[in-house]
Length: 109
Image (cartoon, rainbow, N blue to C red):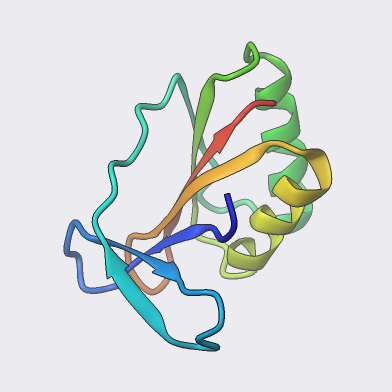
């Protein structure tokens, strides 16, 4: 996947994807959010504790399974995609619930 999917903040069900070559602009695209096999409720966790929590939960999953992560740490919007790239686990979707909360969907490699 070239770019992570990022949801809009208006509460609509559509998902937006950063379009390569159009710096800063977003193009709306309909996409299905994957069904999660496990959910990690990490509300209140900082990025320093979030990625170890994700790593532990991912270790429990079989390859190809999807973990849904709920977080309210603003730095996770950069930290989780970076963690995904470093570990090789696919970031399937990242949805902004509101200005503070984000849901990430990660597929175990």
